[in-house]
Each structure stands twice: as C-alpha cells, then as structure tokens.
Length: 577
Image 1 (cartoon, rainbow, N blue to C red):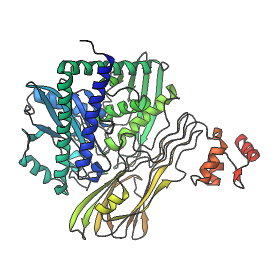
Image 2 (cartoon, helix red, strand yellow):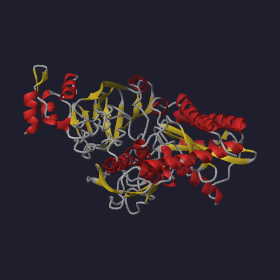
Image 3 (tube, rainbow, N blue to C red):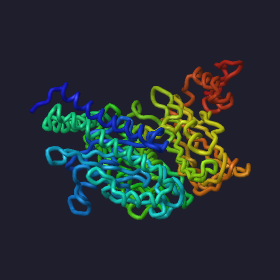
Image 4 (tube, rainbow, N blue to C red):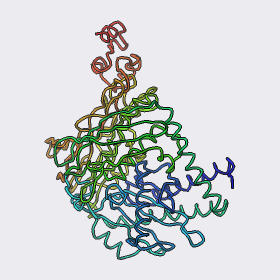
C-alpha cells in the first residue's frame, strides 16, 4: 500500500490531536495545582514492539520525550522476561523508578496497552508530577539526600488498575507513604482518564482508516522525521564542537559539577560524548541515563523545531553512554535534581556547542532552572496538612535576530507557574511581590530575557521550605561575545533576618513560622553577540522601561543616556575606549 500525502498528513494530525486531548484531560481533571494549573505532565503514544515514540502531546513537557519511551521499553522487556505480570485489557501499570527509564521519583508514569483484535496495537503512557512522594522532606526535593530511599517511595512497574479496576491494596501502599494522600485519588483518576480518552480517540482513527493504513503511516512518519533531521545536520559544517556547563553543587559537597561535551558532526549524524564530566556525586544532582538522553533530544528539538516529533527524529543523534559520570546514575545514587535541573545543564552544554556550528539557529543559554521550591506544613485555619510546589520561569537567551524571552518556562518544559491567585487560595501564603527581575538579562547585541522576582510570606502555622534550584554560582552562558545572565538568588527572612543557603540554590528543611518570607530571583538569559554592537536606541528603550538603569546602560552596553536621549558622541567615545 502507498499512502497519499493527504491521508498521511491527516493521520499525523489525528495522532497529535489524540495526545493533545490526553494532555487536556489530565490537566482539567487533576486536583494538584502543579498539574491542573502548571501543566507539569505529558502524554504520548508508543510502539508495542520496542516502546519507541510515535507521537506526543504538543502541550506536554519536552523532557519526557525521551524518558517515556525508555520506561515503556523497560516495561515491555520486563513483561517479556517474566519480571512483570503480563497485561490484560483494562490494565494500567504505574512506575516511578528512576533507574527504569525515568526521572525523579515525583514524576509518576502510567502505561496502558491498547488492544486490537486480541493483540497489543500500541502503548499509551503519561507522566504527572505528583506534589509529594514521601521521603525526607515535603515535596520530594531533598537537597542533601545521599541515597534514593531518602527521596521517597520508589515503585517498579506494577498494575495499579487491573481489568479497569484500581487495586485497593497498591493504592493503600502508595497513600501510606506520601503526604496529603487524600489529594492523590484525584490525580490518579485524572491520569487514568487521560489514557482512556487517548484509547477512545486512537480506536476511532483505526476504525476510520484501518489498522494496516495507520501502521504504514506511523512507519512513514518515523522515516520522514529521521530524513528531515539528517538533512538539517548535513547542512552544518563538519567538525568537533566543545563546550562545558556547570551545576552549582550536588547539595552535599559545596563544589561545582562539570558537564563536558564534545559534539562531533560528520555527514548527516551528530555524536555527543560527555567523557570528562564529573564523577557520580554524593547528593541528588545525579542524572539517570534516560534523562540524559532526553536532555540531548529536547535540546536538538529547540534547534530544529520543525522536525516532526517521533523516534525517527532521534535516529541521527548518537549519545555515547557517559559511564562513570554523574550523567549515568546507577542505584542507589539520589536523583531528585536530575530532571528539573541537571537535564537543563546538559541542554545548555548542547546549545553552547551547537551555537558554534549554527549561530543563526541556536540561542545563548536560557535560565535553565525550574526553580523548585517546596513548602510543606499545617494550615491551622483549615485543620489540614499541605504541600505546596512552586516552579518558576526565567529569561531565555538572545539569538541572532531577537532578544531573549522574559519569564519563559524552563528549557525542559512547557509548564508555567501556577497563578498567584490559585496558590493563595490553596495554601496559607501571600505573594508580596511577583515581577520581572530587572537587569537580569545578559548584555549582548541581542540581550537575554529577564528572570522573575517573587516574594512569598507564610501567613499562618509552621512550615518547612526546601529548594533545589541551580545557576546560583554562575549565570546562564552568553554566546559569541554576549555576557552571562544574572545568577539565581534565594533569601529566606526568618524573624526579619536574612538567610542565604550555603549552597546558594539548594537547601532543605528550613523552618518557617507566620510572618517569615522567601525571596527568589530567577536567572536571566545569556546575551548574544558583542553588547557594544547593540543599537543604542534599543538600550534607551530598555532604560525607559526600567529594565536597566542609566549606569547599567553605560557599563553593560557602552551607551550614555542624558536628558532623556542617547548622547551619541559620548556613546561613541565610551565604546571606542
């Protein structure tokens, strides 16, 4: 059978729409603000043979692109060798084990086979960030864990739903090991409902076009994605491009971790080698292999966003396994920071290498931190415990044609900060400030975007605060002469006295009481190109908008502003000097 172009396009759109509807169902039905409002989740369709990616929702987190195909593949392999019970219609597996193709423990994955004529046609899988999974600290982001058991409940693939009915014993085990357990039923039901919606839509597609036609379309879409990615790579100059990125610390040892990348382009393929990166670390900033691979994939998707999403897009990308480094974590290394933070440093290393090969397509480094802030305590006014999870945006890097985006989502996601109004309704907090962080964008011919500045006050009761962030030691890298963006800052005011975490961006279990405040400044994006080549009128506009002061304009961009305008002669003199 030979597919015509129109039918192929329609099936491609239908598969994409199926995943998008799964994403929407998941968010709309979930109880937790981190899923319902921040959209920290993703849904996709995966091969019944090897778990490879067929389609993923456009509104899902990009970091799960590579991760869920690894976890689905692992489930298929474990079923084949008898380590996991074989599926029956209506079964849904749950798994969050990082070492079985995952991220951190809070990212809980469901997987459900779709049956057709008595055989598995494909798998549907989704991931949702649960606001708590047990462990040493509320929210799961233990900044100083030294073993994965300290981070929370670890689940191998087990059937949470059997023939469509939730197993009460497994559910009881889960609820007995996590905080605020009464909310989990809403998230679990939402996660399962998303899979059922996906199954209904997929069966409609199969009924309309026939199984054989859809199978052929999936294979052709994968082939074309690989072909398109190869064409993009082939247009780049051959060579080896080197870069480094740095993690502030592992939360235990106060020293930076190095990501060393050698990206070799030859013909129509790219090989990524992380040899020379730091060894496995004591704290929770280790990255499991699935997350490391996914970080490379999503970085290349940023560079070539027009390549259709499927496993074919990854075929020309060869990632050598970084054995013996913190980018290939093995049990029992702690990993709570791998998805939200380390993956973004990996992507930053890819950007820093590839901007040398494709300066017109790659940006300077983005903020590169999810800004993980967890607050857990008891609300005396409501008589119940809570776990609040705050993610935040930052500045994106400038590029060859534009300034960076301000307060954009993290590199790895499409998640957004939950609305302030929702957070204040759900938790005993008051946002005293929520604004762009002026002057945080790195100087450049195209400056970086600005980060976010917010301040939260605890209104009542007692709570414990934990932070797993990054870029507190060194800001996001500038590119081609651009300057780095501003670093991440965290200050906790207890009894009015400021406290800065010793590890700058990481600390756990900070006790708070009513009236105490947390002030966070997220990183700005790196600048692109020589700042002294920036159009002085653009610098003037930024000063008028309050983004930079006149003193900063002179120091960072060499632009002198007097009497409400650019002093051209002094600007020329300063830039020449």
